[in-house]
Length: 374
Image (cartoon, rainbow, N blue to C red; front, side, top):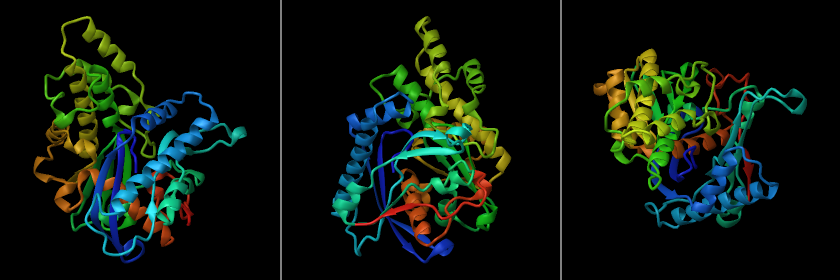
């Protein structure tokens, strides 16, 4: 899958044993590949809501499918992971979310929840001669749900344990958490706030040659309390409606414009802006964790490599002694979402609905996924 941050593709090779909710998943290999600049630039422009000719969307979908097929060919040829001992059954692909509108209300124009995962699966089908499952959000959306998050049921397959309450915290473009209990019916999950979206945006604005805050080195500096307080007032910094989901279109640059103007007019260090973004994210997540009171916290997603962000989350939530990285459980932090998507495809194949009504707000979602075959 490619994520909200649009920095590349993550591919997971997963072995599934068992069926339905009794299945177990084992990660056999994982690879991350940077996205070609031209494709990334085009997708970024499409996610901005900028008006484009229909052919631009068609070309982007085809190019994204070709990019997936290219990386998958390398993986299955043994160039990116250990040799595969048995035939691959199918591919599950997420597509790129270019617009998320779960609260569309224009009934006369087909109102109701919507989300667009741009993707053309046919390059994969043609080149790899394998079935592809994609477009997994629509069954939930048509049933009145947000279409997100979908990974909680996959988290239950991948991370369930004997812990009384275990939280899987994904630090991706958006921070979201899955609260795991003994059964699927008890799971709850939600988007918490924007995460890498806002941190990466501040890095790219303050330091145009950089894409992200590697290891948290740029944000490991003085925190401007006033800036953090101002940023925490933004609606995307703490989701108050349990069924509200976030996307790239949720974020605006008004805060960043104000802080940048202030830095340019003074001798303030540009890193203060990045530090403020990291601190605001950490405080929002910590406030959410205090409500959940987890016995164990499992960190996943690219943001778990940002040590400053992790340190501040632990400090504000007092979870130092109870935190694990997903790596500690055999699933690299960067592989969690791609592996989860493989699990969702397997559940779809077994006829199990992949969205949870108590999570998305849907009213009885059906079995999701569009399948295409060689």
